[in-house]
Amino acid sequence: MYPKSFFYTKTHEYVKVEGKTGYIGLTHFAQDQLGDIVFAELPEVGRELKQGETFGVVESVKAVSDCYSPVSGKVIKVNQAVIDTPETLNKDPHGEGWMVAVEIADKGELGNLMTGDEYEAFPKEPH
Amino acid sequence: MDGLKKTPLYETHIKYGGKIIDFAGWALPVQFTSILEEHHLTRKGVTIFDVSDMGELDIRGPGSLEMLEKLLVNNISKGYPGRVIYSPMCNPEGGCVDDLMVCCLGPEHYMLVINAGNIEKDFNWVKGVAKPWPGVKITNESSATAEVAVQGPLSEAAVQTITKAPLADLKYYHLYRDVDVAGINTMFARTGYTGEDGFEIYCTPEEAPKLWDAIVEAGKPFGLQPAGLGCRDTLRFEASMPLWGQEMDDTHGPIEAGLRRFVYFKKPDFIGREALWKKHKEGTDVRLVGFEMVGRGIARTGYPILKDGEKVGCVTTGSYAPTLDKNLGMGFVKTALTELDTEFDVEIRGRGIRAKVVKMPFYKRGAEE
Image 1 (tube, chains in turn orange, yellow):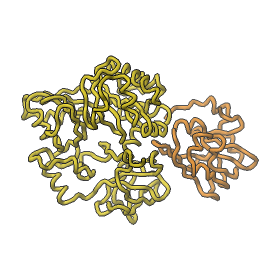
Image 2 (cartoon, rainbow over the protein chains, first blue to last red):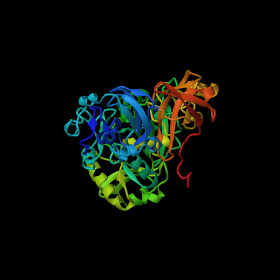
Image 3 (tube, rainbow over the protein chains, first blue to last red):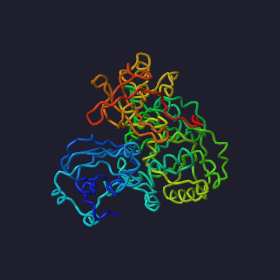
Image 4 (cartoon, rainbow over the protein chains, first blue to last red):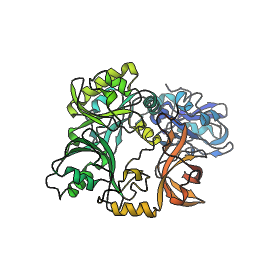
């Protein structure tokens, strides 16, 4: 379910690392808990994010949820597809549903995150 | 979900894969598959909801009609056995104690269907109002009554397969008593809270699971699926039906909420008459409006409404409207800002996002075809 190469937060975001670039999104568990996502607000390109900082907001029919950045870094791309069709976040959370790409400031921070195996085992309480 | 009240259909919801949430102290399913899917299916097909959390007060005995005419703002005397009447129930200040359905069951015999969160409050209120009528007997039947709602354009076709009652002859806001459905004695009202055709069906708690299963089975050829509270709210919101606690409360009554048509001023005396007449004649500080988001954002209950940076109101309900594919809202704003196309801002996460006043109801059955 959860790609082994990704890194995960306890708040159910992931970062997929490709060289210096980190693709950030919500985990399958997060989208499943939220239900049908109908709105996404993403940061502007160029914004400097700190690890753990709110980088966006997603809204399902019933709930509003902040998204926290798994790593520090500068936003270099936002995924227009999730703004235009927020259901992409439900349909393919770990693929087409990535939200922002950042230039990772410090790969050492990845050590604060869970691996795929750890996240798989991480107790996920419905909220 | 410990400590929550359970409806007689709780186990059924688990069996059907409902996602259970705490809804005002009740363990009820917010969805079975997806709020959007269930919403669309109710508009185009048919769904079944558990609404057993609703309260029921049985009112009977000499003086019942006279008491109800005092208690409620609508015209109850137009009722006859088999009729259903919607009415706000007001306090002397013209605010709303609750809004409810009056089911006319027989001469001097009625059932009030009230909101789940207000059962104890309403029961005490009604008993208080009824004191001058010693012949009127009021019983709280809430825990002895289960209720399911079958909603959507295919409701009649789906349910007709398991009852001999001539459903085509049952008009909107009318009811049949003693309807046999799959061997279960029920009461059938052609009412609902979705903006679609449909039925609200009452039975005993013991028989509710059997009734539910029978309807689901009969509905299969029609694509019937169970639906949860999530879409119940988006459906009633699109149809601009008020929810007590949001569009009405102790201080915001039917005049503020734009429900003047349910206040029967021709009655000489009812609770709140004087205050309501004054509000009607002189106007109120705030009025309920419908609005559409012009900027990007979804208004949510409680968000402030601003004009030129100053607070002029508050969102009562806001949501993505699935059938209309728009972000819409309802809210109380200063009366001067309620004209169509008036623009104001909704404060979303600290920023004012533009919205404009649009007509309610947002959605009307049959209007699109």
